[in-house]
Each structure stands twice: as C-alpha cells, then as structure tokens.
Length: 242
Image (cartoon, rainbow, N blue to C red; front, side, top):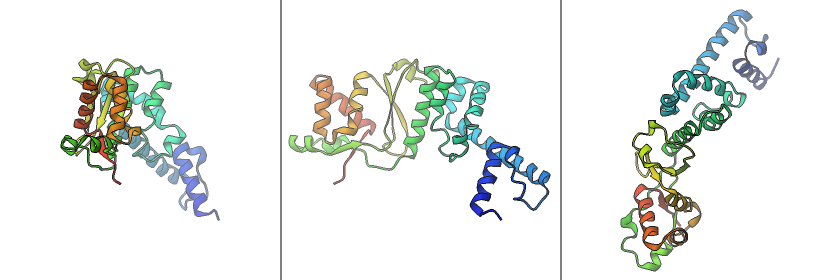
C-alpha cells in the first residue's frame, strides 16, 4: 500500500497535470467516476486562480481588456510552480511573466504597482515617524534619530508611460511611485527622479543625519529638507526601536 505522502503527491499531480497522471489504485470508486470528480475539482481550483489574478490586478485587467488579460492569465496559472503556489501569493511573479508575453512597459509597471499595493496592505504594522516626533529635537538628537523604511513602504520605478487607469497620476509624469500605508489606508505618491533617489536611501541610512547627508549629496540643503519632510508626511519612515 502506498504511503500517505505518496498518495497525496499522486493526487496533486492528477489535479495539476491532468488525467494522464490519474492514480488508478487510490480510490474505492470506479476510475471513471473518480476522474469525473477530480476534473470538477481541478476546474474549480483553476477558476479560483484566475479570479485571484483578476482581484489582484483590477486596474491592469481594465487596462489590458478582459480577453487579453484572461489569455495571459491562463498561461500564467498553468505553470507548474504557480500550480503549486499558495493562492494568496500566485500573483507575485505576474509582472515578470508579462514581459515574456511581449506586453509593454506600461502594463508591466501597472502590474508591479498593484502587487506592491498588495504587499503594502499586508505588511507588518509600525508607527510612522511624524514631524512632531522630531520638530523640537536639538540638532545632535535630530541627526542621531534612528530611522528605517516603514515595512509597508514600496518604491516602484516607472519605466514607461503611466496607464490611464492610475487617473491623476498620469499628469504627474513621475519617475517612480511610492506606495505607503502608515495607518489603515494604502496610498500612492508620485516621485520625481530626485525624490526617488532620496527615498531609495532610506533603507540603508540608519539615522536621520545619514539620510540628510545622502540627500545633500543629491541636492542643496533647502531642497534636501523639503524632500525628507515629504517622505515623513507620506509615512515612509519608522523609528528603529532599540
């Protein structure tokens, strides 16, 4: 008699790869009835994967149109490693897959933005740095103030025209989008090239003084402070607890 693990593996293989992998000796019913049930179950799972992609990328779905989106989604979910993936994470590689299907940079950027939105929504809670936390600090304490990127912050470089599905962000012509969720709501913030460069330094700065020094290498003092204030206001920073 096959082991439980072997039986489970053969059962999953049949669901993922079709009738050619049907485990004849695994079911008490006749093979035809068991296979019919497995086909229905596999169809339900496949449909759930496709629905999950639509739910993960509503703006991309609207941007591409249903027929194109569905055709590419079908090819994506039929990959072996996606079949074995948790349904909550099957969308993670979709942007990369779009590039292999000759989709333009606008669609790929939009997929990356929507997945980053999901990651931000699911990220760990952390108290964002507020301007009131640092406004009254003397200079030495301000420069030593320990910071890190907020766990919900994501930075997505824009590589092509912004999709009309992003509404008012089209007119901003951003170099990047920062996704932040300092409290309950996820928000999108357009950044120019300088703001993008400064935001990219947050994760390695460690202190407010180091972040300011990085910003001063990229711009003058007034502009550097203005950009750091903007990052604080969007909720991109959190205090390192030590």
